[in-house]
Structure formats: C-alpha cells, structure tokens
Amino acid sequence: SPLAAYGPAGCGRRVQSLDWCLLFGMRTSRRRADSGAEVWPASTASDNEQGRPASARYVGAYDVTITEGIGWPTAAQLEVYEQDGMLRGQFPFPMHPGDELAFDMVPAGRDLFNPGLFHDGELFNIEMGVIFDFGEMADDRAVGVSMRSANGFFLGEGPRAR
Image (cartoon, rainbow, N blue to C red; front, side, top):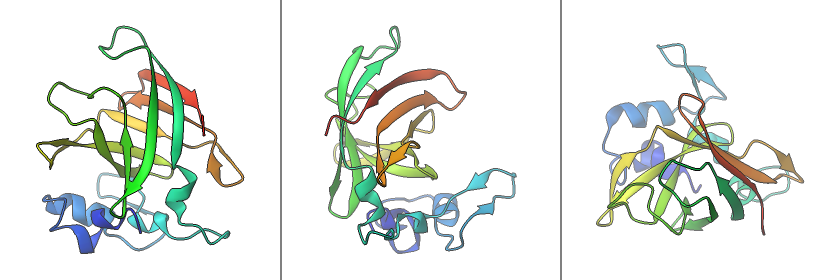
C-alpha cells in the first residue's frame, strides 16, 4: 500500500523513530494511544469496495486559497500523487525555507495527513503543525482539502481541480 512505508515493513527505510513505527504499525481498526489520543493505523490504506487503492481517493490537484500573513502565497495548487508506493504532495513553494517542494503524506487519522518534509532527498521532519484534511468525499474521492495547524488555526482550503 502507498502508506506502508510508515508501518512495520518501512520503519527502517524511511522513518527512523521507533515511536512512529509503533503508532502506525498497528493492524487493528482503531486504538487509543496511552495518552488517550486516537491513532489510525496504516491499514486504512487498504483497498476499498471499488477495488481501487485507498490512496486513489486523494490523488489529484486541489486549488487552495491560503490564509494571508502566514508566509505562503495566498493561492496555490496542491498536487497529490503516488510515487514509489508513497502518497506524496507538492506545492509550488516550500513549506519552510530549505524544504523540498515534494513531501510525503504521513497518515495522521482517517483522511488526515501531516507532511513529511525532505532536505537533500532525506526525510527531515514530520510537520505535526500542519494537517491536511480530505474528509469530505463523493464517489469515494476527496472533493477538496482543508489545511489547519495542530491548534486549529485555519491555513487554507480548496476544491479538487482534477
């Protein structure tokens, strides 16, 4: 599955943190971490009823209007795609200076992702302060995306362009 690199088989390949592997390596439907936070496993990426990979529900382009004053352009297209078995995203600008434009979409809940940021081709940081929410679906495909910070600050949103 596209998200498997963040599960047990991929822990040594992309993610170095043992805690991360434990959180996303669970194979049950949903559990609560010791802290009480809900944790959704990588198995949410399994095939759906239509026989398509679950990642197909997110793949596409989204025209995002971004909140002014956060240091990003106020309009941009988010491209979500699969590459080498990973669900990835890309804006036409880096999230932070020095970040590569493309990032991994790291599972953070059902239809939620945090960007896995890269520097010089290596995973540098899982940006827990940014959440991509693809929660609204039609015909098992995301109709749009919203972005917010971990504390709920609205960062932007936009409809699926294609």
